[in-house]
Length: 144
Image 1 (cartoon, rainbow, N blue to C red):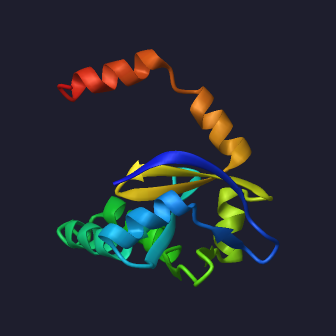
Image 2 (cartoon, rainbow, N blue to C red):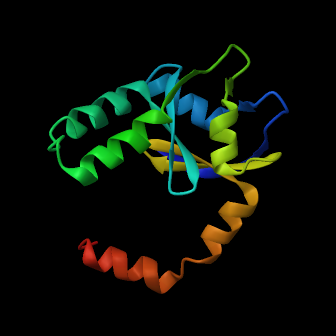
């Protein structure tokens, strides 16, 4: 599973180097294919195998419900295949960079089965908004 926080830069062409630790996990458990989409103010990169599992669960949703249709439009319309090149980089399309507010500095977060990619300023703000009490309450609610 993915874990850790890594600060990197994205170049003007939209290329982002995937940290070696995250690439090692991809190589050990998956392959070099990622599906990147928008969610919660950041980009989320799913290894293709995890994306396929997610799609299987999504296929069970009632497709004619209004909230399901809205989710499908939003989630799938931004989904893009982003393979890792021989230099360990992915190319993030301009529309996704615009959504996430990428300038130059980004933070990659190992988040269990996926990798979140945040604009540094947005990550700093999100990280600062969570308290240890919030985390403790969540752990307690989950029975951990």
